[in-house]
Length: 163
Image: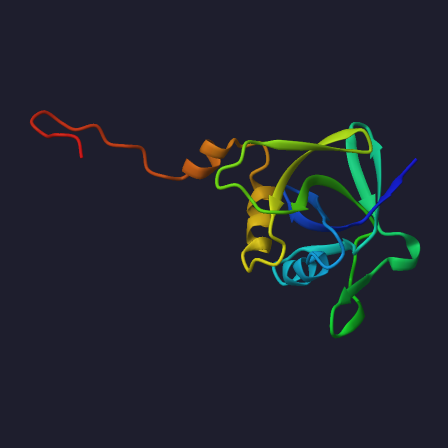
């Protein structure tokens, strides 16, 4: 059994599989615009505007309704046909909203399955980059992801003071 959501679904090849990002928001919030920009960053379209979501083996999955498969609405231009995946697993849900500076991990329930989520202003120029970073860092807490890759602090040696 699947449910239809007012959301788009994009996928990125990462870690040996397609990882999906469900993008939810009201009409006119920038879902399709974000999808268009994300396509330039290596994402693939799964669905635009409406997504059928279901659960299988403890994971949420999504696909486009048959009538909308492979179609992307570009405001001011029209409806474009773009290469699309038939379906993918949903690993992240992005909600239209104002992001917190360092948010605590949040979860939404999709088809009875918990999925990590975050809020983004979908029209921000950095939104596709933030979405990609969040997808690639799933499971890392905010401190770990923020400090990951920074050099370890160096302890002062005898006779030196700490900076």
